[in-house]
Length: 109
Image (cartoon, rainbow, N blue to C red; front, side):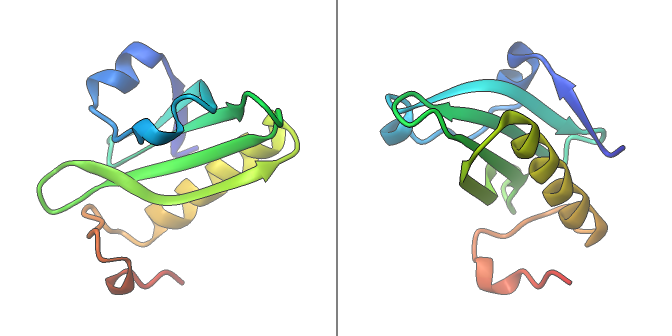
């Protein structure tokens, strides 16, 4: 399995990008990383609707993480975990180590 659960402390040490505009509505509850730390992700819960969200981040040309895939309005945390893992597997399978911020340049199978 290319993705493993990690602590929030370790996740924070990787300097993920967090959008301050959503921090008041989203509560992060689980954190993940691909073994080589090329991809990281988290699962959040909307504090109002109680729906789940996942976000996967990859490193750009400067080595900074940014969101490369996310999905919200997920009914259960189990579904969010499965979708996050599928996303990481798909992104990892591309062989990319750098995920440009220009999403049009990314071509996934």
